[in-house]
Image (cartoon, rainbow over all chains, first blue to last red; front, top):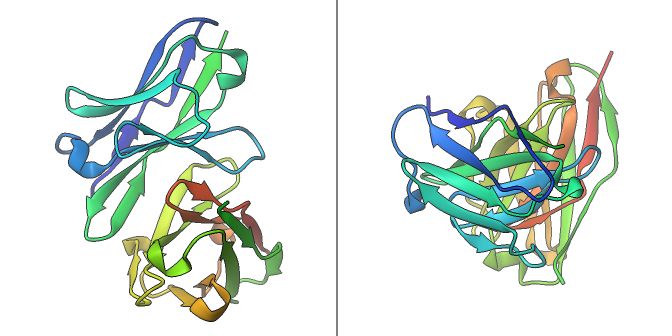
Length: 110
Length: 112
């Protein structure tokens, strides 16, 4: 069974840059997996940040960017702000209509 | 603008079924897949499946096969997700999702 992997937690200093990754337990992530990224704060519905690897959803600041780094999808946040402290989830399209989420990364800004 | 309005919170007993609705507006309903995603308390997001509103075709995550049914009514631009044989593990917020647009979620609590 394919599992999508994410760092359980990460921390970044205010104003700093952080890169979160999204991988597979077997195989490499490519643009064919159409990686997407979501931000969620407690008690709120998730917010789509990035879809199709690197397309920002409407209203998302350009501090958030998506890419493929090596064999993983990546979400980079530049100039981290206090309100970036959230849970971040990635999702991959596995084909045949099937999508899977990663377990999420809890980002702390301190 | 795209809007997804979901049905309200539900409390169900173990073994029962629940049907959550998602009324869409602001776009052509039949032009986009509708996905369903759930999140148990304190847990991550879990993709449940998707429906093609134009045809009614469905794809379900393996772990929900046989227990979930996704349908739609194009006349009222509404998608539905029905989950049967509920257990306490099904207590979660259920979201409908169209591309990058998320509904507000519907809390389903399973308790005896």
